[in-house]
Structures are given as C-alpha cells and as structure tokens.
Image (tube, rainbow, N blue to C red):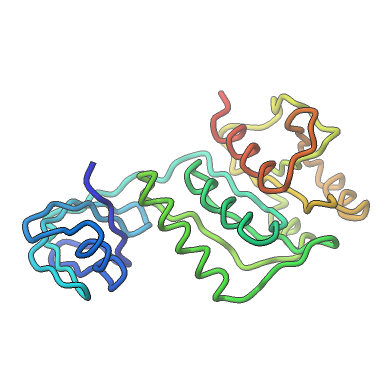
Length: 230
C-alpha cells in the first residue's frame, strides 16, 4: 500500500501537499520525483498521484483521476464526557480507526470540557493521522462541546443508546439500519436528573460486562460492539 497523504481539496490536476506533509515526504520518507502516493481529502475522495517536484516546503503531485467511496452505514455517533489529558486524544484516535462517524464532547454536571478551538484543531490532526494509518477515507467529525439536555433534544429522533451498568449485555433492541448515538458519561456517571432525561426518551440501555470501565475504555468498547454487531 502506498503512503497516504491528506490534502484539503482533491481534484484532477496538480496537487500541492502542505508544509507538514511535504516535510514528511521529503525528509522522513526521503521521497523522490516519480514516486506514486495515495491522496485523500477526508470527504470520501481518494486518488493515486505521481510526484513531479519535491522540496521540504512543497511537494507537487499530478492526479489523473479521483474516486469517491460510499458513505458507510449505519452511522454511529459517540456522545462522551471527555476524559482528562491524553486519554481523550487516545479515544479520538481509536474511534476513528473503528469507523465512528462523529464524536460529540458532552458537558454534564460532573464533567469539565475545554471549549477552545485550538483544542479541537489538535484533535482533528489526530483524526487525520488515524485516517492515514487505518486507510479510512472520511474524516470523523468532532463537534464543539454541547450540554447534555440540549443534545438530547436535538437527537430525540435518532436511536439513543445509554451505557448503563444496569442495562442489557445484548443490544438486541438496536436497529442496524438506524443512525445511533451512544452516550457515555463522565467518571462519576450521569446524575439522577440527567438519567431521568434518558428515561423520558426511552433510551436503550446496554452494559459492557460486569466491570467498571474508564470513560475512554467504555467509549471504544461500545463503538466496537455497535459498529460490528451482526
């Protein structure tokens, strides 16, 4: 498999890699003119191209055709109260590899969320890196943080799944053709008032075994269970 590079816009003709990708090609890979590389733009568009010019600041690539991959179904969203530090970055990386369509950082009574755009941009770079590694052609979306009650109102028409220690271990009630949003609470769990909101929406409750999982572990275990169920 050719080395994959991300570009913001992919079309037939001459493409230039940005400075970071150019440095990786020229310095780390020691790539040369005539090399074949694989490109993607995060919207499902992919292409192979031939390198025509190389410098540490800019690599030019000639693209003759572009292919579009279909949007995978069903779509899975993780609404999660972000764990602290690098654990959220790890969650983002693994969710991307598992094919999660969207991650929504939750503001809950027992969680604190960093709302800065710079934080979201760094996480987007983690998504790009995970797509390059895993062969995924569409970027996972990371939303701005949102309060739990507001999100539940927006998602009321979707299939809502709540990770709950008292739920079922077999997600038989979950429709495979639906857009599903799985909610994962903070380390202290959702408050009683927050749990009432899920009850009002008749959310499907599932549990992931008998052990108490950290937030990031629960999120990825849920993603694997829901994404690959038969």
